[in-house]
Length: 372
Ligand SMILES: NC(=O)c1ccc[n+]([C@@H]2O[C@H](COP(=O)([O-])OP(=O)(O)OC[C@H]3O[C@@H](n4cnc5c(N)ncnc54)[C@H](OP(=O)(O)O)[C@@H]3O)[C@@H](O)[C@H]2O)c1
Image (cartoon, rainbow, N blue to C red; front, side):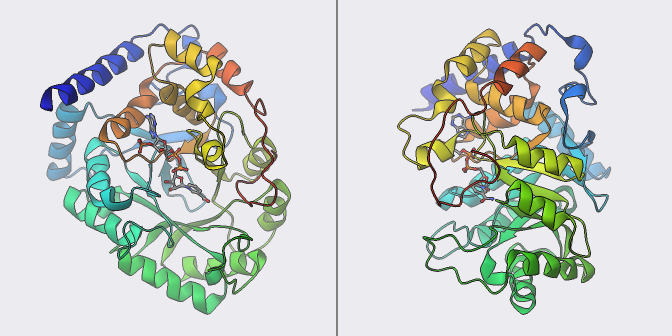
């Protein structure tokens, strides 16, 4: 059984090498700061630095050298948030990693991932929360906490100040840390079909209460998720602290442009979830359009890459931080390496043109944010 695995790894490696060497028609736009970003295309914030380079200690330098040899690691660009701290533009989504969470988090960190996205209500197993499993993965990796950006989210059950403080303390305990890099309000209100959810405050109350989490030193940056453009506009004028990050559904067919424009205007960094098209299949579309769309496939063929590479690189180039999840080590590595793929301006424009190419009636399911 070892041979097919080795063959698969070899194919992925060769694909990435070929991708890197693909001709780029518009080189003038490339080379932002890490040779992988197109400067002119960033709309929500300027990727500004690299992360994953270690803390400068001998131990860290040694690990990075080892990584470079064993996993072809490279540094990940970041965006500076309102607190002045930096957020990597590529991370690992941890929903649905299930029983593999500990192992996959460890593997991802060893590959070079430096952001992990979780939520208080994500579960790894029946008896273990995703946050607890992530802490185990981090410990097993040996990567210092200071090099890792941790995002978690709380549901409307915790929008009241007492409930929020208690929930955040639990998150800190579960994640074995004394601060969260980013705390998000997961949904503006309880979803209609979520009978377990019982709001202890409105979105506005929740938002205003978040400032206390920062003031009390438990959280560095705060933000919201699944909000529409108007809600974001309103919220950005409220509260003691600014909105640092918005996390919404974003994929080639749902580019959430109106809400992204509000975010950009207010200096709010934007993270996309389900960027690889999972929302469509979750909502009953038979085949994931990201993997079968002819435009994406043609670009991928031209660049000798996978459709997932094209989508992730395009998203990040357009200023969207991405947090793909995967239960498959090969996919984890592909996604990490996707930022090396070179896309031309023409490729990017073709990808932009896919917005709203598919439509679906989501009714009141409450997913995403922004326009449909
Ligand atoms: N704020 C919110 O309300 C919200 C909502 C949803 C998600 N999120 C966050 O966003 C993260 C990502 O979203 P998501 O889980 O919906 O979708 P996703 O990570 O974009 O996609 C995950 C799916 O894509 C597959 N996949 C990953 N990489 C692949 C590759 N290179 N090639 C082919 N298939 C690949 C995975 O299958 P394999 O396991 O087989 O690789 C899995 O089925 C979540 O983990 C969570 O942290 C937030």
